[in-house]
Structures are given as C-alpha cells and as structure tokens.
Image 1: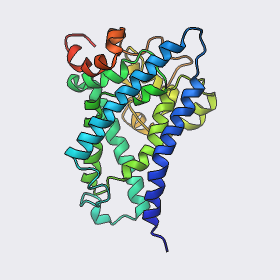
Image 2 (image 1 turned 90 degrees about the horizontal axis):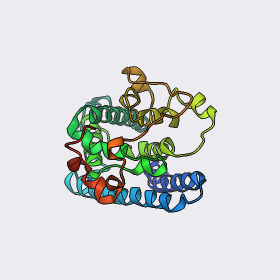
Image 3 (image 1 turned 180 degrees about the horizontal axis):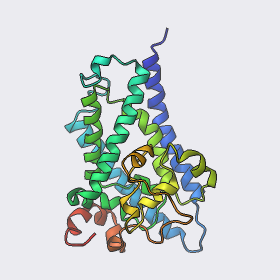
Image 4 (image 1 turned 180 degrees about the vertical axis):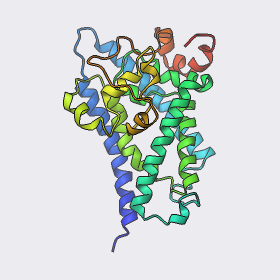
Length: 271
C-alpha cells in the first residue's frame, strides 16, 4: 500500500508550481490592456515586478532559506516542539501548521507596519502605484527573508515539519495574486468568502495610501485574525481613492535598482 504521507507530499510538489504559474498566467491575461497606448507601460511594470521577484527568490528562498536556515535539508524532519506530546495525526498537524503560520504571518505583517526598520523594506510592496497580479509577487528580498525565518521558526517551535508551509502556499500564492489583480471581481466573491478568506476587496483596503485603511486588514489567507484582534475594516463600495506610497510613486523608485535601494534611500522621507 502506498504511503499516504508520501502521496500527499508528491501532490504538494506538483500542485505548488502548477497552481502558482497557472493562476498568474490566468490573471495576467484576464487583466489585459484596456487603454490605447497602455501596453508598453504595462509591460514595463510587469517586468520590473517580476525582476524583483526573481531577486527575492534567489536571496530569500535560496540564500537565506536554503543556505542559512537549511530549510531544504530539514524539510521533512519532524522537530520536537510544543505540540510533540500530543502526537497529532498527519491531517491535524497540517491544519495546525497552516493556521499557526498564517497567524505568524499576520503578526509579522502588522509588526512590519509598526516598526520603521521593517516598514522601510515592506514599503517596497506598498509602493506599487498600480495594483495587479504582479504586485502579489513584489516584495523586497530582505522583507521576504524575515518572513521566511518567522514562518520556519513558528513551525519548528510547534514541532511541525517545514513542508507544511508548502500546503499553505497552495492557497496563499494564488490568493495573493488574486487579492492584487486588476480585475472586476463579482460581488458574490466578497459575500461568500469574506467570512473565511482575505478577499480582494478586503485587501485593497490595506493598500490605501492613507489611514485608517493602510493600518487595517493585515491577514494573508484567513480573515479571522483581523476580526479577532480589531484590525478588520470592511471594504467600501469603491476602491480607495489613493493607493501606494505617494512619496515613492516617481519612476526613479520603480526601477529594479530603485526598488532594491528603497529601504536605504527612503530613510529621510516621511513614509
């Protein structure tokens, strides 16, 4: 009889890249180009965000996650942690890991808006003046390195294998791109899913250039953390009038070098 855990891991390995790439291409095509003369500007925006994403993967996932933390070498280890005495079955361990890492992501995201040293890196994500599917991939590599460390640390502390984060990524990656996509989502998406998931309308509130929007809706996958800890803000009938970080909207901040150097060049700005 086949090992159910091995079969499950094989499904995650195959599903992760397929679902992520498929969702990205679907949303990119759906967004399209609806205005004359918009194609070159859109292509430049997409390529810049994808270039930053490539650097982020090399630095955060490759160097920090792979070399420094050794996640690849310990991916299937079962560490001893807080939940070890419970001897949870596989399904319960996966569910516990998904919710625990999603809460850790909420806490780290909220801290990134409160602590200026972290905000200067996270502001690279918020400085995108035009939300689309690629915004969900646009993160400074150091911002993402801290995120990877916080998620890995949470799983190790609980005694849950690191590969469980791959299960959450099956939900998170497509959802993150959908949250940022420049597409007309039907009203039923908010009506039927907002009680559980961070919907596109809910997340767009967080990309408001001004308070209180930018100080709300920190959740990544599940909306319950914002509701539990008082940071939930219901979306309005229309998108925020201003998105992004106005002080970083100029083209000099939007190039690959500008994005990578933002945390140091923007220290003197009030952002």
